[in-house]
Image (cartoon, rainbow, N blue to C red; front, side, top):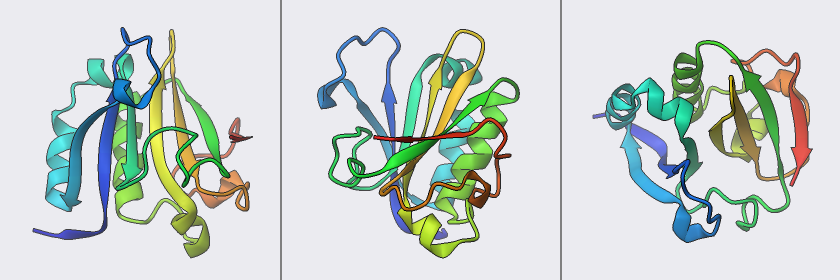
Length: 152
């Protein structure tokens, strides 16, 4: 088994859930090893990814803007129209492998990622712990065109 440099937690928020307090988020799994992540991501059906909100957050960081690690930050927001499942997989792998950015300071500031379904597309967000890093070109895997940075 290949241990990750830090643990990650996959959270879900179901589409029929109208409550947005912490109890409405489901902790699906804590990932410690690369092999666990591969197994987890490959078993998630595409329908689930396009119909349910998922959050992959560093351990001890909840998927809410109010979390102490998120409240002074923001997020890069991308509209994903095609290859949603593959994009989610690729970004998830880069996140846990610490390769989403070649800038070490930028990479350390990332607290997680999320995907949320819309009618004919999904929104992928890269969550940041601060607003120091606002340049979407620092994210190596996703083209910066159309990306917006939102402060929490």
